[in-house]
Structure formats: structure tokens, C-alpha cells
Length: 107
View 1 (cartoon, rainbow, N blue to C red):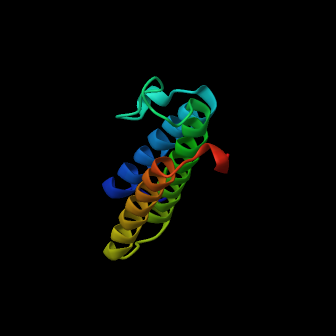
View 2 (cartoon, rainbow, N blue to C red):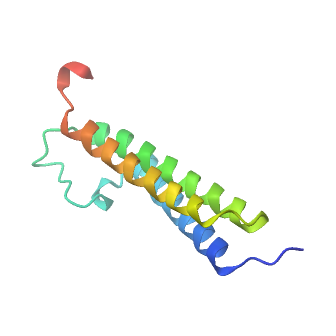
């Protein structure tokens, strides 16, 4: 049996938590978890935010969990963690762009 180092455990735990939060946003409608979003003042409907943000958070959570699995089985280079972090930043920027440019005609 392989022993898990602390970095792998951090990535696995973070991935699990983020995946659970993504599922709660997408399937449970917990959009209140999104900082700065208010369904009363936002022009974007709650179901669009729920679907878009939920998908993004689920994707990020699964990617972080998979990286944790990879880190627990092998010894990845330290730069790979930075690549995952950059991918997370890009996913969040994409989410912000999609929500800020949403229009009723596109739906």
C-alpha cells in the first residue's frame, strides 16, 4: 500500500469539497454559495447561473481530485501543480465572462 503525502491529501480533500459544492450549486440550486450573486438584482436568471456556475465548479472539483489521485500514485513535477492552478484561473475567468455577457437571446 502506498502512503499518501500531505500534498496529495490536500489535493484530494480540496477536490472532494469543491466537487460537493459544485453538485450543490448545480443540482441543489445553492446559488447563494456564489459570492456577489443575488437573484433579485442580477439580470441573469437563477437557472442560468445554477447551470453555468455548477458545471464550472464541478469541472474544477473533478480536475483537482484527479490531480490529487495522480499525485498520490506518482511523483508529478512541481510545475504540474502550477498548470492546474492556471487552468482553474482560466475556468473562473471563463465563467465570469459567460455570466457577464449573457443575453436572453442566447438562451
